[in-house]
Length: 395
Image: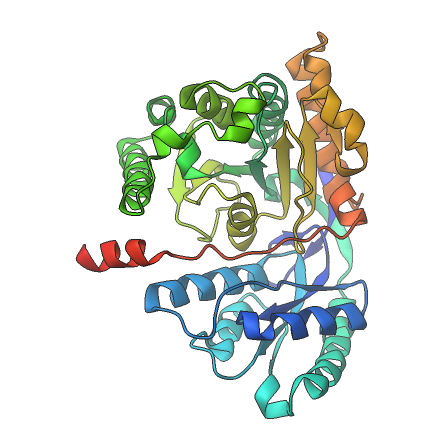
């Protein structure tokens, strides 16, 4: 049986599971205006305010542009408005050109040129109204689950994560990949201690070498900043939740990707393939930046596992929250979508994994997640640190 869902077919052939009009500020200076313009426009508009400045070193600027272009190209975006102060190194027109390649309608707006914030909000509202008129013409049609790119993430892990929530989501990943889809997990620092296990699962030598290079690079960058990643993990919060070693945490973390071979690994915010099987992304361990990287890579939907609790969402992709901790399910039920703690009570991982997969199908078919209901929409771009930039120049 082929699993199907109703999605928005885009001009480039990909399928969105939402039909947002995105407001993408090119810097922190334009972020507040972007948020206000989106809020005043309507529920269909989604802003992606972030913290990156108007002037950035070239490697950081390129990464910011890749993230913003990737978000605008995500199939959940039916149209996009690039909003700039007008003094940024990040070029709104350059990003717009990359987005329009997919056939997505795009406009740009400069706060300086239009006459300041009040005028920008008013003109932004007019442009957003026009863009929504175009986006609203999109009609939902039946699509195959093999067209899904499923991002998976974990945060606030505890002892239940590795035995319940993560393997249950991994079971759902296996099901999607068997149906022809793509699953992707990331957070390279959390590969450390289990990188040898992942390396054995790589489909070929090239993928294996790239995986180990990314692990070594993340560890070296942390070392430059005086951080011993192996010594700093598990975090104090993880230890309070019962995790005792980095190996225990990492083996639990990688189980959320399932059991299939690692077919590839891409850089932060780089395009993820459709129909690609299990593909890793090199991201930092910070949850919000990591989720944004996968959404910029094209993930239409994300599953987020947590033991100690999390409120994380995303403005562009629905985030399905899964917990394996019964106390977190009781205390934060209005933030959670799937209760995987029943594994601890004896329910099989296969049954809980099937429930996660069914939730995935319902969400891509239109059901809102708890994070969407509450408009929890964190967004941040991974910022390259000075020592990382210096190391890059030395290379």
